[in-house]
Image 1: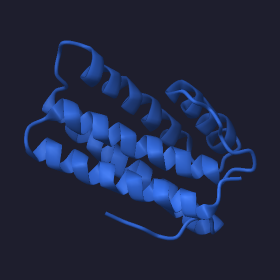
Image 2: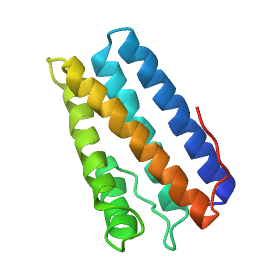
Image 3: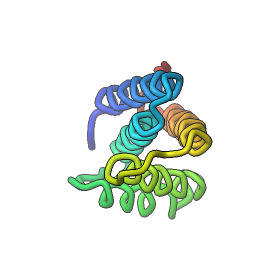
Length: 137
């Protein structure tokens, strides 16, 4: 199991990514905001998986997303909606990072809103399970 201090570091990293997403969105960079919103969720998911009975060891984004679903959502530790949010955030990030188009402002606002909710829910989960100290942006 990864020590809880690593989980706390990952949550701090998630908070920094959320703050960056806000700044980028305020500056009109919808693609950058979606990228940072996704990585906020990604790092929070890593922190949650670090506290799991069988910590995630995947080296890929798809592997981490699958492990999040199998180890935390499927057994009911976290709501199904969080799994859907993480999958959707990855889809939007891939659009933002690897296509010629830009993410619409409304979609970027939604991505940031979902990232905030995701990070908050993971933080609450970790606080309830006693696996990470509280941090916030």
